[in-house]
Amino acid sequence: MSYADAYASWQADPEAFWGAAAEQIDWFTPADKVFDPDMGVYGRWFAGATCNTCWNCVDRHVEAGQGDRKALVYDSPVTDTAQTFSFAELQAEVGALASVMRAHGVGKGDRVVIYMPMVPQAVFAMLACARLGAIHSVVFGGFAPHELATRINDAEPKMIISASCGIEPGRVIHYKPLLDAAIEEATTKPEHCLILQRDLELAELIPGRDLDYAALVGAAKDAGETTECVPVEATDPLYILYTSGTTGQPKGVVRDNGGHMVALKWTMEHHYGLTPGEVFWAASDVGWVVGHSYICYGPLLHGCATVVYEGKPVGTPDAGAFWRVIQDHEVAALFTAPTAFRAIKKEDPKGQLIGQYDLSKFRALFLAGERSDPATIQWAEEKLQRPVIDHWWQTETGWAMSGNPVGLGQFPVKYGSPGKPMPGYDIQVLDDEGHEVPPGTLGNIVCKLPLPPSGFPTLWNAPERFLTSYMNEFPGHYATSDAGIIDEDGYVFIMARTDDIINVAGHRLSTGAMEEVIGAHPDIAECAVVGAADALKGQMPLGFYVTNDGADRVSSELENELVALMREQIGAVAAFKTAIPVKRLPKTRSGKVLRGTMQKIADSVEFKMPAAIDDPAILDEISDALKGRGLLK
Ligand code: COA
Ligand code: AMP
Image (spheres, rainbow, N blue to C red):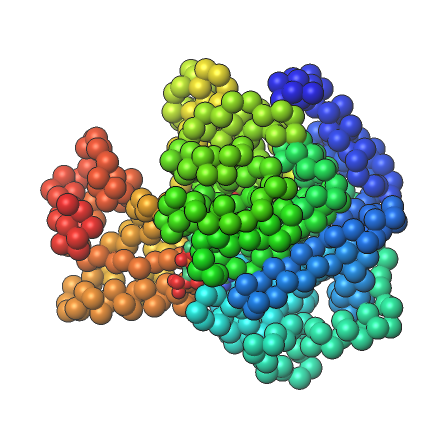
């Protein structure tokens, strides 16, 4: 079947299409209906079915006689470790952990926050939650205590699973003090924290609250303890993943069990072209949606091995790290963010290190998380001599909305485009009034409802925000907040966000949240943060601020304070390094800050003078401030 046939067959009968895909999943009881249009905001997939995601990722393969097959590879250049777990070993680890969690009160529907570095126990923890029917919420390790506290307050976890430390090149991240600070700040306290003590650092455990992961899980494993896979409704939540919204309060994207499994299993075969038994590597982090879908769930659902990589594309130890991992673990497909390739290309522009490794098992490279610039794709194609596939997706969907399915026979690549809509997605481009625009015209990218399986049914604790953020602007459609075009051949092009989200090294960040941090400084009257183009990270945050009258501050000192505040409040991942003083911010006559225009000035891109601008002279002041810092010629 070709891509065109698959898309046409989905269009002709979506329920038959997803009903057939669902046959690849083990259900305890089948669905009453493949799709129930009367459930939820826009309908729900596989209503009435019961299932267990951990069963389908782990136990099912053991039952089928594949217990000895490789399931998870841990490769950690920062600790000089490589370790492999078979499906049977994975089952023992996850079963024992689930039994420890259950013994400490975690059951179906309870929330568990996971704040871990890239170690196999992070994946075990996700699967153990799935096994118990508990709902995990993984928080990226690069977030600061305040961000963690916000998520703890919203998710109200019964347990938090964490580690004593994480390792970034050149420094140890002391997770435990960060966790303690977050719990101190949070208004909701977990009953227990299960802490993985790592060799590099032993954390102090708080008696009564903190539990030693290795001791308890080790004892449970030795005693052969496990739990059964608890049946849950297909429509029950598997996880909550918080993602940046337009304010400091992140949005808790809810993912269900049934639809998620069906969609991911379909993608493993058809989009990524993998066969069970092969090795799939998503070089991301379990804290992001890519990590959820393709470090943890997708490969395992398909009976593939997954790679948990605790390292970077460069510096651990060099720009050959990815090729070394591909060789050592016989990786068939790699999925990462373009920024990783820009980093490799910068250090090894001729790709000389590639030739030093055996990449004979490696078939294709997949890129997502941010716009892939054509130069990076072309470089990767030329150096790797393999297909390089850009695909576009969001935390909200859990899998690609557009792409180029290798498993269905790839269609020609158009550089700058993340392919064509995937089956399940009726993608349209609308003007601000909601009218469809002609091919090749820039507009708001929306997806006609219903979203396909795995699409988020709501936001945790925020059903109203779900409607106002995504559903109300273009009735009958999901608003992606991306702007772009669909050309006459049906290729999608993603050009920019329509909200204040920026994308830094493939990490989704809210400039609104950053402005809240700067605005809280006692010397700041007002501020604006924009995403300025960056050759390596795609975008970098750039802050402008106006001080309070009478605040006589040396700007370099104030900048240092703001940078430190951002690391403390949001985390190092914000990559906030620059804050520039200005006399005034450019605004419309109604007082709206002209962030888009400021961004264009910073990027030296031509712009039209906004008609409603209050005082055009302020734009020159912005240019002068940037020139003063050497950021503009
Ligand atoms: N825990 C704690 N801190 C973390 C972290 C984690 N899990 N991940 C990143 N950080 C820190 C970094 O150490 C860095 O701190 P610094 O400012 O003190 O140097 C900061 O957060 C910014 O990180 P990042 O933007 O990732 O920059 P970097 O210079 O460390 O690395 C790349 C740059 C390109 C190598 C890296 O971003 C990368 O590999 N990106 C591509 C893959 C990816 O993860 N994409 C995400 C979704 S698919
Ligand atoms: P996240 O939810 O963190 O996955 O971020 C989603 C956002 O990243 C999207 O809304 C896009 O703005 C951007 N994005 C993801 N993949 C791509 C891609 N292939 N091309 C362009 N932008 C992308």
